Length: 356
Image: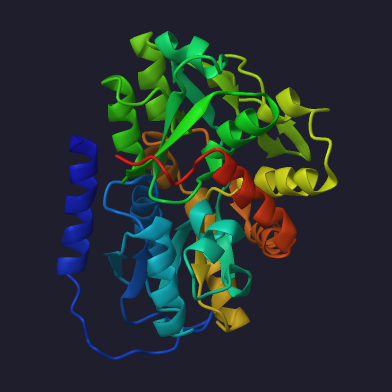
């Protein structure tokens, strides 16, 4: 907490010391950016995308032409969808507007249900972090209930009202492995899931942050029944910190018989790979995008940035512009029938019935 407060003080000092001119000047790769850059983050202060955005942004500004100041706007709601729906319609493609996004803002299934007013495939992606393998944590006193349908279901918590990436493990477990789960929605952020797990209000929840994983394992009260896996070098690999927990795709292998179910599963495998990303508005000129890509690469090679972010999470691999664009296109092109299959399965599991 002290570390986060220190970051916010540094950020406040930077913004306070910068005079706002009110003049918007289009930026080009060879030109100095003379006005502050506004970074919109669709998540609350202190959440992982916010921390990444602020730490990345501070270094990124130093590597952009003109070393502009940074203004961060937090607009939480609907997994960041509300913020991007506004941002994409208001942000000018002039290099002065960027956004930090997460998987919930590129999940086609979630975008349809939340009536998003944007197409993430049109964004000008710069780079970001791939999602680390997430572990599905279960209270040790509830493990038996997770696998036994003759008893009370294990309660799994969900942030917001839509399915998040780590939760696909429970979706497939209930669909193809007979897991016994009860979905509970309405938590605002991952930190609330962890607190609810500790006090016994929830039995199951996924976690990907090294900080959360280290803490939960240290308590000795939780087991990891599966992990999402991370796609590295074209192969799904496990995460050592999760202690050899099986990858969910290995657990369901050979159990997905229906062709449509397989397409839905493949969609889920794609969305779980989306971590956090930096993007510019659609129609941003290539010269500006190039300047940001160079600054992004320089930032991730910056020892100060590396040391600072490592205190938050040292495990997330960097992903570049091309890989991000490919992944988002594949999600955008997912067949509607596969998404409808996911919704049908969620309804069968009574997703949306239970809430805090």
